[in-house]
Length: 522
Image (cartoon, rainbow, N blue to C red):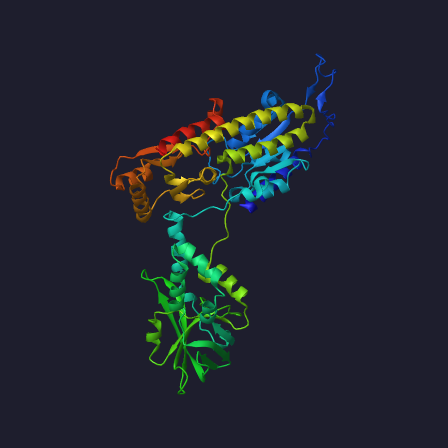
């Protein structure tokens, strides 16, 4: 996408050059003043230059209008997403890029959906433009997108990490020398308490006690050896009682490990010894399937029965470099393959918190006052009056939640309302995360959400304004009662210029959402 935007910007600049290069030199245009003088304006009324403000989404657009108040005719305000296009799928047109490039103030959300902005601003003509990034303004108030139990993304996440697919044609032979060095089992660190932070994290993730997780990891990582030293073709095993055994090992090939669906999830590399004493069969798995310059940790199985017996072992012994500190091991466990997580994505839907809205309006007002100091007093007064309305509505929301008998919402849809629910201490379940592009929910997700409706005795299933209702209806049809109301809350992601012309405002939509919320919480 960045490449496409760069090409578009270059074409727009080239067009400007070409139109100024006719065969006959053009007569230079007289300089344009910021206001029209009496010679140009017979009425002697100066016409001041208007502020040119570009916003991406409706809430920003409406906030700016409210701050300007009766001075709104002093500005040209553009809402880029004015035809129902969702923030998460919007891409700027050439006309949009030109509008941004020359404006006095540009307001955008600043999340992953706005990655295109960086290129556009880099080529902007107005280098003095005031740029407002909502996420940057809010700072540590911004939340990471949350994957709740039962969400479609939660199933995908589990599938991704439990069944990492490897193509068989990509698997290559590997040498024992790749694993060279001295390695330590995690069991001594686990027993000493050095991995307590990891145990607590796993307990929280699994909804289990720390004792249960300790017992599970002790069984999972169980191994007779406490250290394994590999030097060339020699492996030396040192056991709990302090005894050691060594042998020369030769490569015996590899075996792909397959999931139930046939996908290859890992590869076991096999080595065999002829001498007595040390284990005859050894298998390594470091999650790789081709030669590697460096191995960060590995899992190893060894014994005298057969390679097949090792493949069927219940344990998964975990070895890390003997030189690694407990802090380094914790970092490996918390951020490495065994608990790998994608980089957290910010939840972009900050405008759905009235408290965020108040803070953002104060900031926008300060920037408008800098741009137009002559009217700063009016802008400040407008902002105070508007923020007072936001705060009053916030109090109404809190009162409705305090009076409610239910404290959990359930969405058969995407869930962009996390900031709102967190403001008032509500819990929620949903089919998808707020920024999801998915439209089909799995059988697992439908059943989970339907069971939650039954378990919590919910009388309403919610959706957002762009939904076709199919998922919410399917959830309702899967419940025991099958009589829940299907209600819609407006996330303002599809508000159009036509809606604005018909009187839609941020406050009126949030008031309507309050009525729906109160109904859902009965």
